Length: 204
Image (cartoon, rainbow, N blue to C red; front, side, top):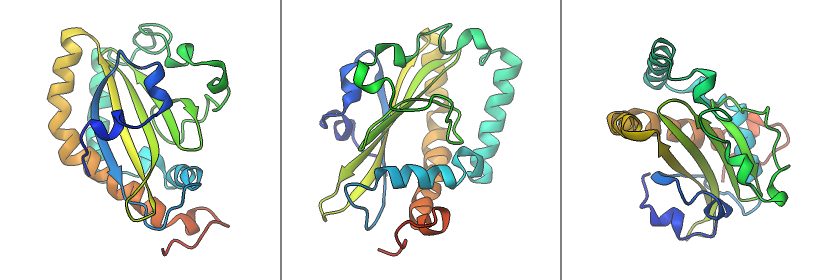
């Protein structure tokens, strides 16, 4: 479910300390019935075990395949357009207490690089010729005593071209990509006992 920007900015996430020059593009929530305050690592593990971006719906996979093909043809994803070349990684801004909270090689099935992970929030990033983007995942209390997953997408478009690109892909994000992620990630939570032997029964 789409949420207002304030659903992200009103919370005291660590990301606010060093990403002020990024624009908040989207905020989305994912239902995790029966979740407790310490279940954020369980949710992240279930998402990884559920296949990450590799197991999205056929329409979402088709869109990503088209995007990667265009990127290859037009040079959008060349190494010199990414992290550490066109733009510095957000990791360079981290305070010392966050620098060793993730293994940078663990992509989790996502085309994004881990930045940091805490008990209630995690950040990944990606950069190419169009945009430098951050995906912030947070674990938030709900009014019924439970918790839910929230995702905020923060972007820094690469000039006029990047802003045009973000505007053009907006309908596809809302109509295909985010609904597909919702089904996939909520299913991962429901199936966590199957995906993660030893975890709690998925029935709340």
